[in-house]
Amino acid sequence: MELVGLRAMRAVALLHMLMFMCPTMAVAVRRLHKLQPPVARARSVRPRMLDALDLIPRETSFPVLLDAADATGKAAPVLGPVSRRALTAPPVPDGASILDSIAAAPAPFDLCMAVLLAIGLYLGPDFVLAPLGLGSKASVGYRTEAAVGRLLSLDEAPTWLDDRQAGLASPAPALVRAVVFALFVGGGYVLERFLSAVGSDNAVFYLGASTTLWGGLYEAALRPKLPSREERDLATTREAEFVAFAALRLGAQSGGTCHETDIVRAFRRYYPKYRVDRGITDAEISDLMRRWASVERTRLLPGGALSTETVSARTAAGYYKGITVKEEPDVGLG
Image 1 (cartoon, one colour):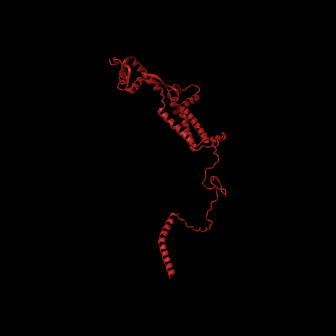
Image 2: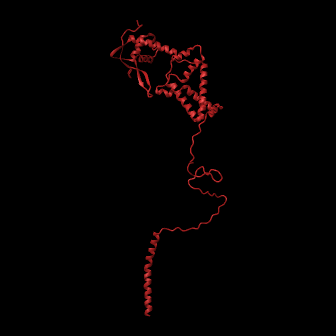
Image 3: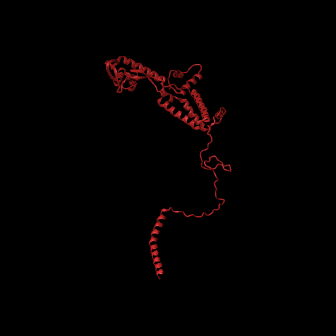
């Protein structure tokens, strides 16, 4: 009986020990489970059968050239670097191809471009040469008209050629203008065909449009106008009259000054035909005074050329220093 009681007591003690340790072990197991990373559950892959509509990409190695061909001989639309083929310059046309291009039938676009180039050739490159001091007084076409006129009139030179030889503006006859127009249109067409064969139509358009636009602006706004024979004779007469007026009514005086309005009034009082704003304007009288009281000055242009210009001694306020108007009785007043 004592042995049975002892074993019963040991069983009760072991049961109490297990009851105390089970919660502690459960907490430790939960903490250890939290520290370990989650393990993904393995899923079985079901085999898939391919049918005729499925595309199987062929095996390739990176990089793949863009110009690579597949088994059928067609270019494969795959990604890859640019082709490593050497870039070659466009072939330079030979003389035979250029002659064939010139002899070919022109299209309407070619004729328009030929007219643009012809206008640019007629106006000339003075819009580029003028800032460098190398511009001329007349355009290339204007000088070409004079040369053609001399060739067509071998016996004696007409009056309009004499005027142009003297640097005056004179219209050319209709026959000379027609010949010059045909020459420049033919030259523009040959130039258009040559540039189209060597370069491109865009280059022809840009060249023709730019030369026509800038050459026309320079011709209309910046080129000095050539006077006609009548304008030259009138200017010569007025300059002689002003020189005669200045010799009698204007004098040099140290420290003296006079305004240009005083000179205009004195000039009109000296010549009765110019009184009451007749025959000549105040601005033209002022220009005569500026040319009379002017000096020549040489300056260096950006291109390295020397330019001689006439500079007036007039101040910004319109006064002339060292010149006075003499107090003398007016001519023709009685």
